[in-house]
Length: 177
Image (cartoon, rainbow, N blue to C red; front, side, top):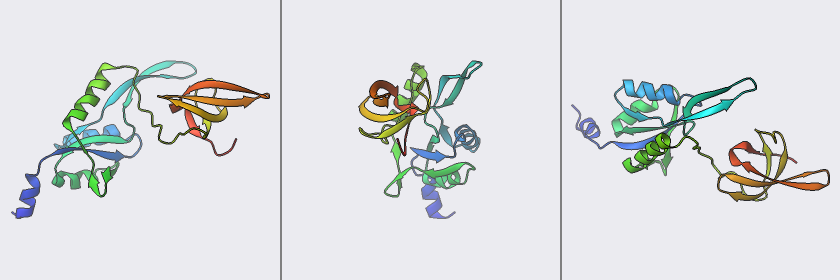
């Protein structure tokens, strides 16, 4: 046996993050586990509301992301699993997640029912945004203040300003107002 392959097989396993095609997280999780690779797809239970019913569903906590505990040799297998787009990396090296961080994610997803991940990186004060859900659907306005996961938004209508607090996950950047 080639000594380099033997060395890769004995390399320590680390938790890493893979980026997946949309809605492929669970399929990839199952496929990796069938190959003997430790994978973790944190899921949360949420209530989806339609016009005629409310349904409780399980969905990935981090859409399009999956955690794997693997060594360098296993990484080459992971890259070829259908639906895997790439490994999340920084300066060309895979981002390593500690066992403690994985345990914290497990505790959060098991302990809390009303939990969500909201990225605020794309929003800043002064941005033009459009509401994509809820009672204010399709309303446009300006971000006035960001407060945790809520955004204070100014909507100008009828020569007056309506100031509302909106969940950040209900907003998309608007191209024109």
